[in-house]
Length: 385
Ligand code: USQ
Image 1 (cartoon, rainbow, N blue to C red):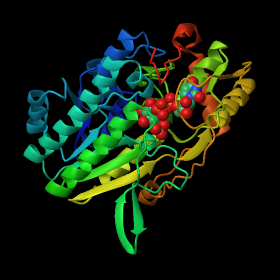
Image 2 (image 1 turned 135 degrees about the vertical axis):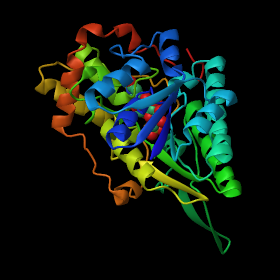
Image 3 (image 1 turned 120 degrees about the horizontal axis):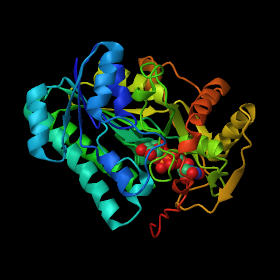
Image 4 (image 1 turned 90 degrees about the vertical axis):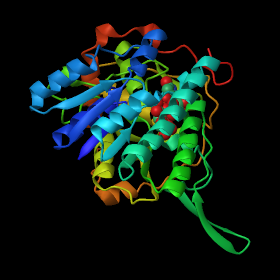
C-alpha cells in the first residue's frame, strides 16, 4: 500500500515508518520538526541526539535496502498538505502530526493555543485533503485513552448503547479529558465523526494509552535508528521517565497518591496495532474506534516495577510521592475494554522482568547524558509554570 505518515519524525512516527517499510509498503513521511523545535525551545531535549529525517532515512536504507520518501513542511498549511496528497495519492494515512504532550498544553496561553491550532488545524486539513484527492483512502488517527478520562463505569471501545425513557441508540462513549491536549483529541474525534457521517470517510481512531520503550524489531541493531527518548516532565511519558530517573539516582517522581491507573503498551505494540489497523481498513462511512493498550498499571505499580528492575541491575532506586502538579483522580475505578485489536491479531508484548531489565539496561548506556534539571519543574494544571 502507499502509506503517508504524518508526524513521521516523532517518537511513534519514525518507528512506524520503518515497520511499515519493512512490511513492504511504500512509505512517505511528512513532518515539520515541531516536536524537535518545542523540545529545544523549552530545554526538554531527549536523552540522546537523533539524526534528522533525511539522515534517518539514509541509515534505514543502508540497514534494510528499502526506500522511504519524506517531505518537510507544515501540514497546517493547505498549500503544503494538498501538494503532498496530490503527489503521493496515499491509500492509507497514519496521522500522528499533533502536539502530543499534556503538560505542554498546560504551560501557558501560548502553548495551549499552539496545541489547539496545530492539532485541530492539521486534522481539519487532513480531512479536506482526503476528500479532495483520496476520498477512498483510510485514515488511521492517533487518539488517546485520555479522551475518556476516568469514569466510574467500564470504558467501552469508542461507543456505548444507551437506553433512555424506553428508547435505544448508540453514541460515542462520553469523553471527559484531563488536560487541554487531551481535549484537542476529543475535538478531533468529534470532527472526524462529523465528516464520516456527511462525507462517508473511512476512519480508525486509536485510543492509545501511554507508550514506553526504545527498541523495536527494526532498530535493535542500530542505535542511530532509535526514536527520541524524552525523560523530561513535558515530553516524557511516565515509565520512560522513571527509567531515566532510576539511572540518574533521582527519586522516582510519583505524583500524589500514585493510584492513577492507565492502560500501557510497549512501542512494539503501537507498531503492531497501527499495522493491523492499516491492513484491515475501516469501511466507507465508518468511524471505527479501538482502545489501544495491553495492560493497566497504577503509577505506584510502575514505580515498584522500576525499583525491582533497578535492584536486579545494581541500582538503588528510591520512590518519592510529590504533591500532584496535575488535576486528576488519584484513586479511581478503571476498567476499559480492549478486545478489538486482539481480535484483529495483536500479539501483546507484556511488561515482563526481561523487557523491563532490557529497557533499563539500554537507558544505563546514556547515564552521562542525563540533565537532572530537566526531570522535574512542576508544570501545574492550574497556573502553568
Ligand atoms: N505521572 C507521575 N509522575 C511522573 C509523570 C507522570 O505520577 O513523573 C502520572 C501522571 O500524573 C498520570 C500518569 O502518570 O497520571 C501518566 O502520565 P504520562 O505523562 O505518562 O501520560 P499523559 O500525560 O497522560 O500523556 C501520555 C502521552 C500522550 C498520550 C497519553 C495516553 O504523552 O500523548 O495521549 O499518554 S493516556 O494517558 O492514556 O491519555
